Image (cartoon, rainbow, N blue to C red; front, side, top):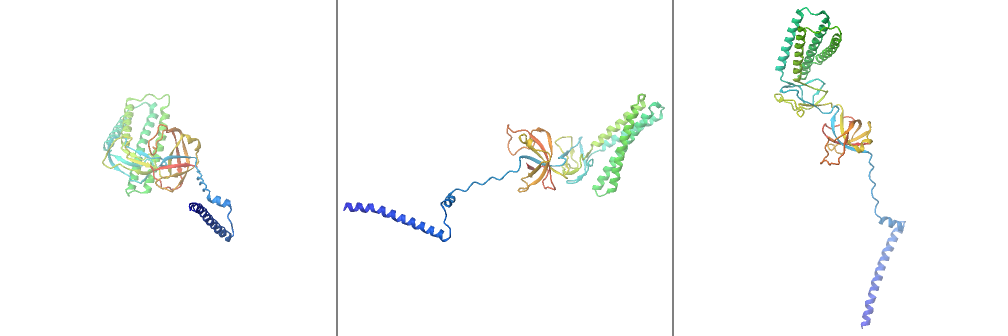
Length: 362
């Protein structure tokens, strides 16, 4: 009885193995019959290929040789204009986004005192001239006296022409002027400037003669009075804050009635020539040798994600310097010096001065 039980226990594993083998064989037969019915039987290599892992994706090719951070700025850069003396703003002649020409009046400080000083100096100079002309003077200095008088008259004519142009430009902005009157004022200004240069050259020639005697007391008094006129005129000119370059008014924090003083940090107006937008980028010294004038550049900005702006390298700085554009994060002691690279952007781009941007040099 025990031996029969042991035989039965040994036969059960054999029956299970036969059942499993039959099942696998049946599945294999079904698979082969399926592929044969479809007209193709897969090879062993096909099964191996299906089991093998997929190859890794090839990384995209980078078509730039260097990258650098930078900031957008106008053609002339951001030109900050400030006051030359302490005073109160009497008038602001321009507005934001106005296009101004070089030398145009932007802001006028209170000039009552300066005008009074100039008028007093001119009156004194005229009195000294009458005294000089009433006396018989050395004939050897006649050419020098005449040249001095011509220079002084030309200086007064240039001052009057400048005030005339200033008035006409301001009247045009207020809607009361005309293009013809402005053109005439510009023509007068140019003629006065040319005449002054001519008279100064003639005065230098007359004074350079070796036989010219020293000036008399009356002549010296007249020269001193005319010097006071020049000083008073220079003081009056400092009450005028003019545009040093042609461009667009980008910032105008000045307000009429405010007190201002000479300060490098206090800009009353910021001007830039927006006819051409540039990127000032800072290239690490390790990449300097790769950058050439005329090279193509692609510029990207976080303000316009997904867009690229094309440009070219217009200028390279002659020397390395410390970075001006702080990276997003603290600087490390191992940070390198950089080369400032000017990049002209093609076409009309929407990038604004002061925006951060990155340059990718091809």
